[in-house]
Image 1 (cartoon, rainbow, N blue to C red):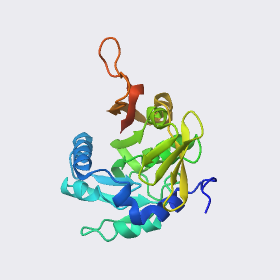
Image 2: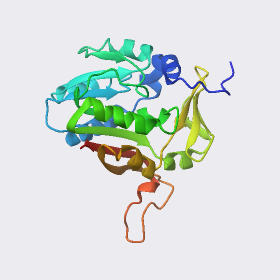
Image 3: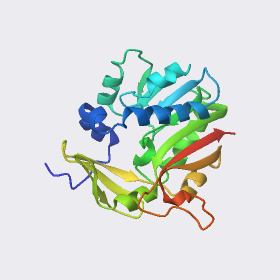
Length: 243
């Protein structure tokens, strides 16, 4: 089966890889624990009504529950949600595409997270701004939204090549690529907004902080004054606080 023409449906891609997701796509356990400890540290005190966008198989749910939060998971992939529902401590799960209108009432949540590059697959350039407005609608004033996403520097580093076992990146633009899973013969489009795009998209409703969380080991990555350059980090943490 050819994978030259990528599906625009993230749901179709994640349905196809659900059976091998935790084995081939997830972070190593120690790194996952480290990242979740940081996420919990930037969230307001528990208990929070917390929305997990792109919950997937739910690997982060135990950390959030242990942190005292009330978690709702949302995902467009039914196969991922089926696996998430088998967890020992199930949480409410919603099948929906978060790039469309979110199926929640106003002020339903105190916080939201979108981890592991969940927001790297926006179908169109304006979708990040629309998602920002929807999250502002369903969260309360003072809510926190935490995102992890590859930066354009990740794409500069990978270019066209193997990202991991059975996964190949084919660059299609300065900030876009196609991520191909050769085992399942499926692919997904990737769009990596620049720093100014993140700030512009979130500015109407959120105060935004962006920090690097992974430097390219093959570059200098520092200014003459010894400071890290955000543009050289291959992954960013975005922390937005609802006005």
